[in-house]
Image (cartoon, rainbow, N blue to C red; front, side, top):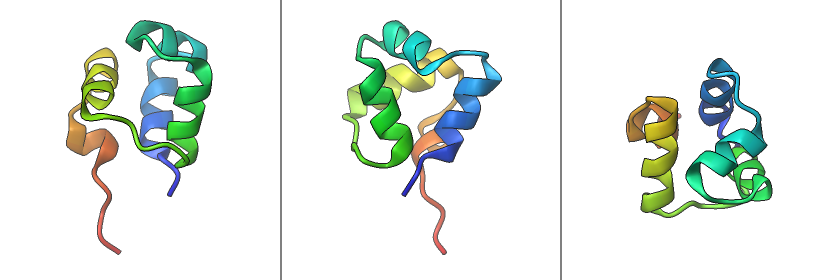
Length: 66
């Protein structure tokens, strides 16, 4: 499942995938894979992303039930 919430939050901060990757210490490809739903990040990485984007874990990574 794509992480459109992460992509929207990143765009809302006017950050590219490369910018976010540099801020949290991973590659651009890692951010791209998280957004595409092809990579399940560690809790540590999730928290780092949340801190940079000023969001909570729930806001970025909680999947709503269908």
